[in-house]
Image (cartoon, rainbow, N blue to C red; front, side, top):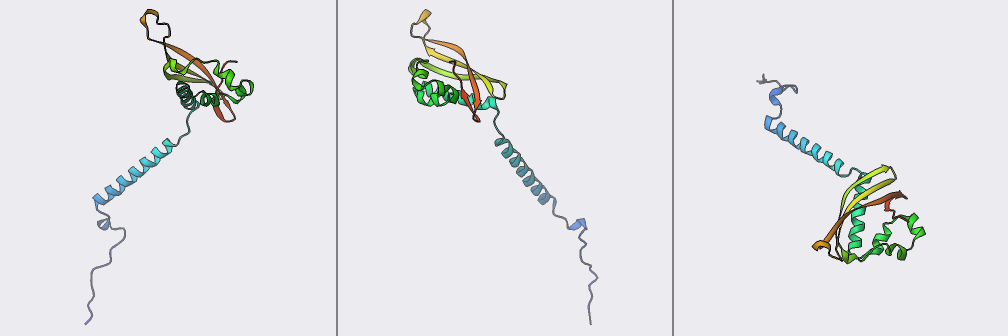
Length: 157
């Protein structure tokens, strides 16, 4: 005797066989985390603005100068400047590195796509203590130019 089963095969559109709710939430959570990481990764590799690049290079230049590494700071001057002034002429523009206490890039503004001004706050030791001030702080404006695809400090000639 043949037996037949009255039970039919499940319909693929039947929602009673869909994934449990907790599994759907887990998949959604993983997808959202993945999308967030992807967006964060895109933001992390976004190109820097000229202002950001100049601020970094200006801070690097002053760090080198304060460490008495003027050769390194000279390399951050514009190639057009280096074509006119050698290292010795550049070095004569600055006093002893030991006189500088600190430097900080305050802001950078770019007047054009190839020219920016960095404003720095520089603190120096007071070699002639006037009114008992051990240090003096001043603001300096530095000109930075884009040459050969890189930003360089352009000292006054």
